[in-house]
Image (cartoon, rainbow, N blue to C red; front, side, top):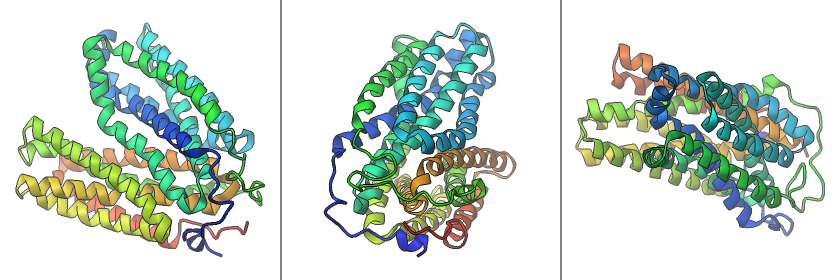
Length: 407
């Protein structure tokens, strides 16, 4: 039996439809990932205030974002392996506790070195939280709706794309940048208690009602896990090499006003959330393999069309931008569901590797897009990004996933 076979929808059974965890826990997962995402995206508008506070340049202040991302990328696979051994709920609660304290320390830091240390701690703890939440949602979901549940949880992180920066700006304008992190820390510590009671019914290694954890079998090597989640890294490169510089292009190439740029980014955000939610439902109905491949091919086509749309009327440009997001984001929940089918009892570490590669792909994509923007212009980013997306579809179809072990 192959991983593609396992990615097909699971027939509805009496056990599979039992939902002792319930939709309230799915809402908790959504809010938890919303807070984690807000912590990442809230920093950007606060950099000028942080730079002024510590008497450093804006570029030096931006190192706080880099340290967070690097800590996440390096820490996620290690912490994920720990989660497979000691339990995802245990790692989630510990990670949330440290995350809340790290944000409080960020707001209290009297000098820049301590601020950087606090952001490293925040990145490491976020690496414990995000994959654990995703894994618990996947284990708690009825098998025939797993991708849909994962999509709802992931949409919390996507919503933070649109809400994180405005929230930080509003709080900083009323109080200061420090209170922004105090607020995140306080909300996180509340979520510690909420999550503590939300996942008690989830079996350590399987879905509620399953009766037993899936057979562990031989453990997959790090190479096997990295090969599998390379699809996510290629997806992130394809999407964020272009999206990172869309705002710049909307201003410089399309000559849109600041207000219209904001509208365009909202359109993108709505498309991303809708794409993620629809991707989960489509994967549950038609199988994850088709959705992942279709999403990767679709985003590649839409990226090329998006560059052409910069020479079209504004309404057309906004439509294509929304369609780009709508086609790109079904990939994530569908592929996460496929990983859960394929790796069984190792899913905690695999989801951590998956998160790590998403950050890696985003970082490399943003860097490559910046090089292309400065050397050749924005219009050259799309062909490169589209080629990476198509390569991701090929990797997914031919190479990434191992033959699944029978349960």
